[in-house]
View 1 (spheres, rainbow, N blue to C red):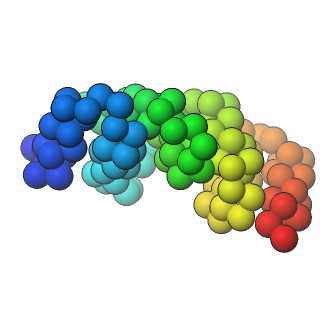
View 2 (cartoon, rainbow, N blue to C red; view 1 turned 45 degrees about the vertical axis):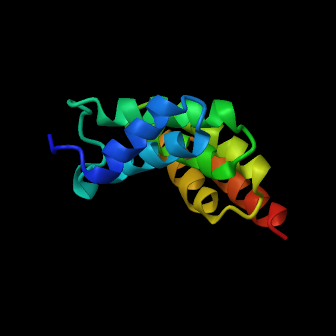
Length: 133
């Protein structure tokens, strides 16, 4: 496991000083997700990095539930933890908050296909394109 970098330490201090700082929770959660090897995206979370990111992002969403970016990042974390249904709920919430969210356009159909829910995949694609107009 890599050592925390300066950005991680700074965000950890910011959260310790201001436990209700949604931005710090979001940024640290995203930073932790980004720290994982891209080629090992679905590798086991042996060091708890994704679990920590998920907890931070969940707190950010609790503090500011109206941000699509928070819901999207939380969905990524939950998918990496092997919780596709929970991830899907986050992406649906992100879609409601931002109908033009292109990340959802790509990620949701892929997630549904991986879950064996092909028919929903196409319905979601049509709905997402129609909602973005």
